[in-house]
Length: 89
Image 1 (cartoon, one colour):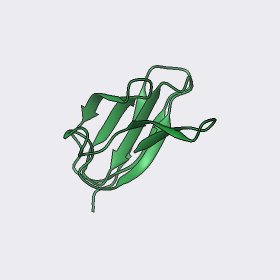
Image 2 (cartoon, helix red, strand yellow):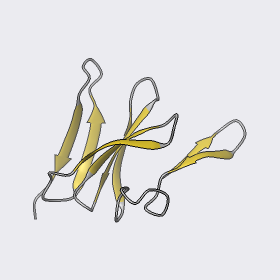
Image 3 (cartoon, helix red, strand yellow):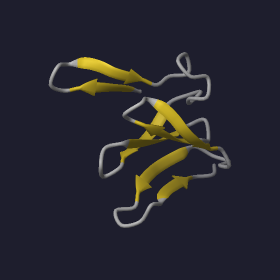
Image 4 (tube, helix red, strand yellow):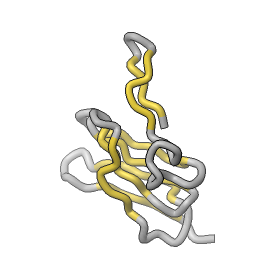
């Protein structure tokens, strides 16, 4: 995942398995940005959701308790909650 500055077209941060070994092992299937544009929540086919800080480019926490791909992630507009949806095959 690469965060770009749209005004300068320069890369601000890059999150990848090569940069941080804790990042997704496979494809990112879903992405949500919180309402003040400081956090990114990604869901992957590696059965994990990862919360990252967009200002620092660092992983805050990893939700690893899922038994299937994380298909949808979102932030609550009124509470400090995240929603993670996954499907079992």
